[in-house]
Amino acid sequence: MTYLTKYSVAAPKERKTFTHVKYPQHVYWFPEVFDKIKSGLFYIPQRLADKVIKSDAGKYVKESPHHKTCLIVAAGNSYMGGQSPRPENIDNCEISYTYKFFPLTIIQIFAARIAQSLGITDLILTDSSACASSIKVLRDVQVMLEYEKYDRVVVLAVENGITRYMLDFFGETKTTLTLKDEEQGIKPSAFDSINHGFYLGHGAVLAVFEKEDLAEKNNPEAILQTACTVAEVSTNSAGQTKDGQGYQKSIERCLNQSNLTPNDISIIKSHGTGTTTNNTAERTAILNVFKDTKTVVTGYKQKIGHTLGVSGLLETCLLFDDLKNGFVPGFENRTEKDNIFLSEPISSPNTGSILTLASGMGNIFSAAIFKSLKVG
Amino acid sequence: MNNASSIDFVELFNALLKTLKPDDDSVIFATSLDDTFETLKSDSLDIMMIILYICEAYGVSEETARTFIPLSIKDIQDFILLHKTIDPESIEEILNNLK
Image (cartoon, rainbow over all chains, first blue to last red; front, side, top):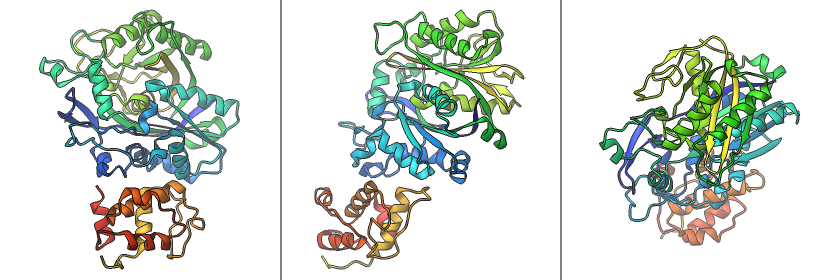
């Protein structure tokens, strides 16, 4: 069995308005990671990673190095390494910079440096499965622990989405909320007929997974019951089909792999971007599988921003925190009321598993099922 | 430009290494100008980055910096004293001025 022993998250709470970009919009960010960046000498993903490496989970790995350990860096979108996000004609923008060190933009080299700092030398892997990345790697975690006989797998998910390219791209595709949208009264939300969409964000999560014998000595947080990744039948390489077949396939495969039924799932942590397409696809899949159950659906992107490849695992860990505090949160700014998609917080259910979903551009759908061991 | 510096390059090297890898317990800090990067088990990327940090602080062009392949901290000091166009007064000033 695979246990989640420790985790640490870095999720921004500070909101910032960027006006010197093509589509002015808000982001959730850590302003300090942009300190002195104009020289190109400082590396934003490293600074985000430092936030969780210095935390309890990082210390735990460093202080108990004598186990066969694999590091997986879930880096989301491969250009995270830092093709120049320097904007043309907007040099006064706070996110203008060009990295001086090309080798550090190669994710495997970045990962090797992270491994050095954590004292991991057995195996270093990387993943760039877009916004599904940090959930997609959970299958790799299981394989490493259950078949490859590693004692421990450390997952670092880190990505900086706050670049001019990303702000332009998401603004242009009408996925992030722009100031123009907000002037019309729209607020970030998901699965709602009035409010929709998200702000970009960035962050990191460090999660330590271990085999049963090691984890049980260390007061584990949760059991990873299963994980899977699928593609859907589609002619659109970037988008999702409205019938939700990708999400549905990933959910059904996860249930099959773990010998669970829809009734065994008490909470779904949705991908929940709140875009029109995702609202339709993810809602359809969830209702197709869970319509006759008491399962509830929650999501975090409207609270902390869309942290892209980091989002799946980071949001799942935030849910573990909330469960410990005795509640499951509702979607921010959701105006509709129903029994499935939460608009208000509810008390933590005492039983049942958690299904977490993630989807990435490039036709990738990942799902994982956890059992939290510390419900408040 | 005066061919000297009030700054101890061993201390400067260590301060920049700490800036670069603030939380890496495996880092070996230098104790002497004659320490080589081989004996310090330095990562080649770290050395490249430290050279660019120092060259920026002393006003040496990036183009010149990238041609330089030092083997020890003394090599860095000799190179900087030869090519510098700025004379920072302290390590603190160097760290503060990196933009």
